[in-house]
Image (cartoon, rainbow, N blue to C red; front, side, top):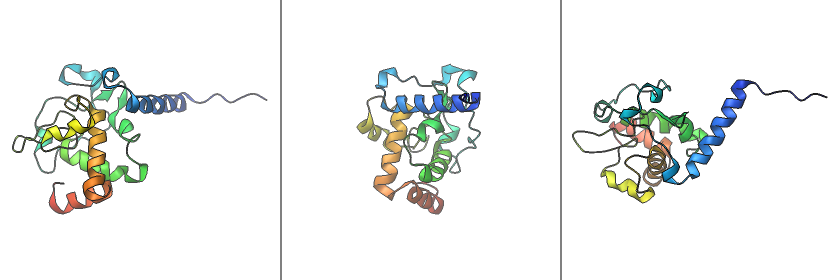
Length: 164
């Protein structure tokens, strides 16, 4: 009996999942982040960046959300956020920062993917909070769970108030 060879798409998906899981547990010094200097290779390929409904954070900052060691940030987020809660998590992040880890709200000073205010609150999850999207994702998920019970709760609040 011959063993079936997995398709290239399946192999890439498995490798991406393995790499994302490794990154979540990797020491911050080993995690590369995409900044403005990264260029076209780091462009956000998720197609979700649509601007902030509140008109705040997404329009400021020139850095793109980009790719984290070749993985879309949403793939990395899926290793942190439970799959059933991910659509709500995605909606909040899309509206708050358009998946830009360097987004700054020019009015309030809120910063990052989850628009932490004050931004230094993310230091509870790592000293690299300003430059590491994984740290920001972890903090944002924990914040949503602590304050709203879940990303679904955060999204429901966001829909009513246009902030969370």
